Image (tube, rainbow, N blue to C red):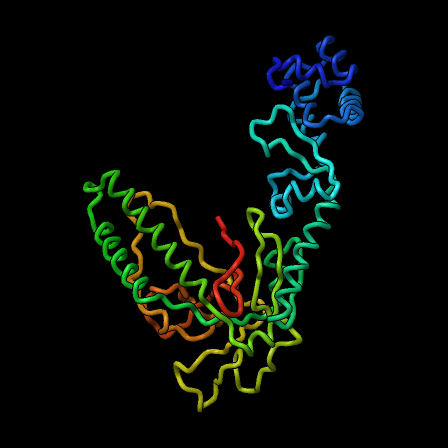
Length: 354
């Protein structure tokens, strides 16, 4: 019923007297008074107002919201979404809700960051415990970045292979994509642009399904481990195939990264299965943006994924996506560098970078 009242009535009904006095004295305007409604704690509202009043000039609504929420965590954050506002409240966590938020979650703030992190840690630890049944080790971390994983070596899974049906679809879509890319600029229409975008989206979908079939070898599972963390959008992300420096295979004399360099070394011989710490394992993101010319990007003609070696090396530069041209150069990255791939079976979790 309160939501049906005019804005001044809803604000004044919950505001402390000191703020109403400031409004009458024109020390603040109605918009600034509305900003104080981000919390229902009158004591906190009064404390922030007294602090701002001491500066000698009127505060803005943005400053009010910032000061009232600076030690809170928004419900739209990855961490809050990972735990869930309902789970957090069920554990006794306090929540502030902005009476004038434009959406249901945009004005929700979690007041107990420590409780939220404890709940996230417990959820991550449960996932790490399950992963330890397959990997040599597993760690739970709320936050991680490239620097946290750069000290590890890497093992890579065997790439997944497309089924005959998927391969036929890839070739059909690729052929049509190349036909569209060969058109002159003057021939392009909105319908053709939309068709090209649909083709690219479908190709990405098929490739993602195929990549999820990548599996690790049993010996690699006994050598490497993984870090499970909060992913983008509030999902769970597992960074797998990490080899601790002390567990890295010892490099024999006369080798480079485990590959022979002596007279007996054959050109084109298999590459080492373990990448040294610091090797680039960043996965090339798929560019969904349409080029300025409005033409679809020229995609590479698909080929069988079985042509790839089992693992990658730091010097490799080709993509491991099934459907890339066959070459003797192994792929530089695989799904373990940016998405969770279980030891056997389809990948789980969410790892999408935008």
